[in-house]
Structures are given as C-alpha cells and as structure tokens.
View 1: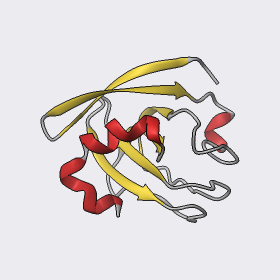
View 2: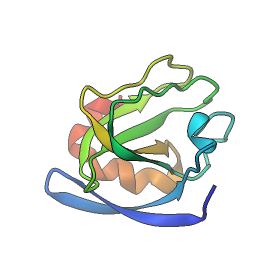
View 3: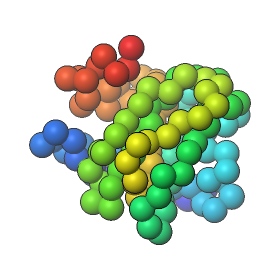
View 4: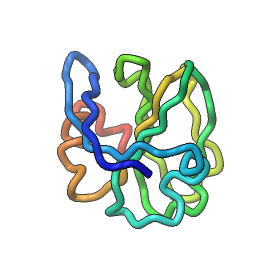
Length: 120
C-alpha cells in the first residue's frame, strides 16, 4: 500500500479533508479484511465508473463506506457491519473510501451529522 494522503470530499454543499491510504492492485481484493479498527482509511480508485460490489467478510469492526464520483462528491454511503456478504451502491461510482469507526475518524462522522440515522 502507498503512503497516507489527503482527499477533499464533498457532500450536501460541505467539504472535508480525509486522510487515506490508497490501495494497490492486490490490496483491492481484501481492503479492511483482517485489519484492526484503528487502521487507516482506504481509498479504492477505478479507471471508470463502476458498480463493483464489496464485502465485509473478515472485517471485525463496523465501518463507513463512501461511494464517490470522479470529483469526489459523495453519491452514496452506508454503515457496514462485520461479515456482511454484499455491499453495493445503486449508483455508479469512481472511487470508494472505507472509513473505520474509531476515535481518529470522529470528525468524519460529525461531517455527516444530519444523516446519523444512516449510521445507527
């Protein structure tokens, strides 16, 4: 995996910088699997718009998945529980950011405060 970077995301007229680690080709197959909840946020980049499904098998903590367009606008997001078989968006997306629920990411959850019911 590559070093940590910052990504400026946009949602409901607001913007937020998020630290992330870009996943390489092989890391795309396992993402947060077998990691601790204090791991880095992971960015999956695709060359074109896709509707690729994800899974949380062997992910032992809850996380937030953000589906982004090519301009890093959040087009969909979901709270994901451990060992969920299928995670998908009904919309095509260009990038995905996996954000573990942990104390260093509290500002990200605050950013989505108006939609916290999606997190419960």
